[in-house]
Length: 186
Image 1 (cartoon, rainbow, N blue to C red):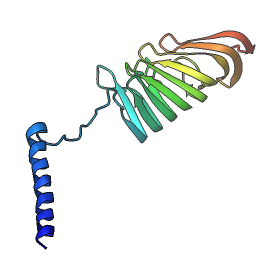
Image 2: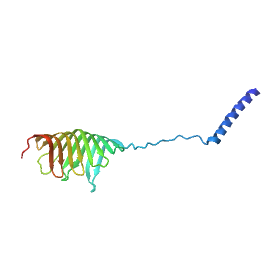
Image 3: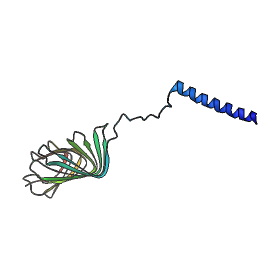
Image 4: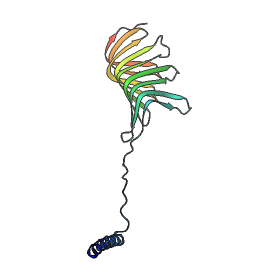
């Protein structure tokens, strides 16, 4: 019995001595470290609205999207199922819809792609202009809409088609680039 008691005390003494020695040599036990990512994940939202205002505080454009995701490392915001509304220099409303969109963080260009439809009224023109294409770039500051893709356009009830389009909404000018088909006379 004394032999067993001596063995237990020896084991306890060895453990206590080991703990005391470890504390003196290594200090406190290491705490877990938290690593932070060097990149910003950005934001994301569903059923969201982005409104860009001008210097006068009035909306330059509004983007409604089923999903919005910021990619700060790429300087972009990606959008899905997009509806964009804006006014040209004369205050005429325009609406664009697309499957996807990209917005530069500088917020000057909105790139729309996939089943793009845009409609609005050009000043001095009778009727609405409707444009359908695969992709479209909208420069908000200069009111210029461009594409290099095939375009179907319905303007004042008259169909036109071409490959490529530049529409300067400030100057009320639409330029069809190439392969133009249609008849337009007034």
